[in-house]
Image (tube, rainbow, N blue to C red):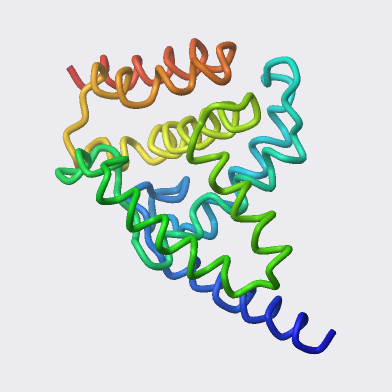
Length: 197
């Protein structure tokens, strides 16, 4: 029991490092970058509040667990913003391999049974094939859009994002997992881009 608790607390201490990983997206008031720990918590809350937007068979409790775990690998890999100059690396084989190594290390801190369960949830999210993972991915894509809108453009301004880029990189993924959300979010995003000319 003592070794099990030691491993659980080692994992939890390591997970705290996620608070030090800065993202390109700002917090709502735009005063500073959001950190990855804040992002993960906010996504879990998004899933809870927007559960009525999930498709048939989606288990929100599993979605919340995925979202709490999904960015832990950024402790080792860092954030790769989807709109940055390095955005092409987002989802690349190199980034995926680095994230898989990070998952092995980070989840490997846990007792084997818990490590296997949590790593399997992370892998399911990454594969983006099950209804739970597809909805989780859509929530992961929609939250930064709303953060950027609230911050007067945020990372869109920093990376000279166009509406067409937003539609291709984000909109399709949101629409796949939460089709009722994207039209509402899209209208607001389009208004921001139109106002900028």
